[in-house]
Image (cartoon, rainbow, N blue to C red; front, side):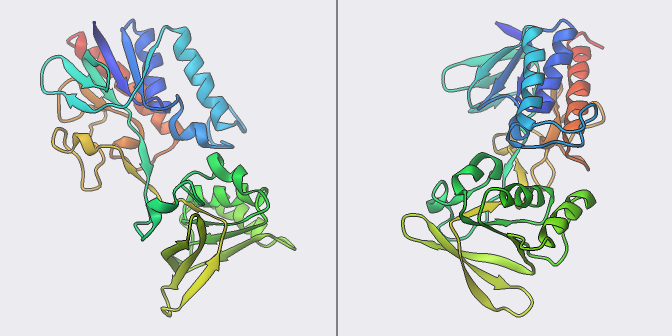
Length: 308
């Protein structure tokens, strides 16, 4: 079967694209490696999505998924191993199948950046995590730390303060780059009497220590060069994300950070191939902008295959 459109990635961008494409009468296949929702499904509370004062990320993801399924969306749960995009019919290969379509939307999102220190891979799942909302419950009444200075690290710190015995927020600078509301919420908890939250600023992690599981970290103060040991049961890394475009670096035009370059219609450097959401070069990566990208990409794909 040759689909009108294949969408790779089932986050807000991909799900929104599928809704718009299906409503336009297109035959659509969505390929997702894990579960619909992407990063959003791992978020405990969303307070900046229009129409919802506050909503759980998984709940919002499931609402989007249910809407697309009701319209007849087909979903294939698999990793994409290879892309063939330069011909009129676009092809993607998974472990078990080759899928073909007249157009393609890449809604690949981005994955967590790593610390790139010794023993990092050794401790993944053994005290080291890149998702506080996924793994925070394993550290009830434990001592944990979050490293990062953006919205995710601030939100993670607030979330973990209600679970862990002690929470440290480690940041390489002396000011945070998160939204003002998140900084204010963090500061409020930090300054509470008998707060279980502390901040360690101007510091970076240079080593993870432990035998069979993470037992602590070595910190280096960037101002005076002093090295200190911090005993921990768990460490959560929230230092940013990188686009999942490794398979596309010799196929599509990417920027220096690996994000897909598009125009305002989400068109990439290859005709019939579009990109939406966090994977593309843009100034703001939020759920609402991912949805906007997905809608635009779907209509652009529809116009492309109709010859518009």
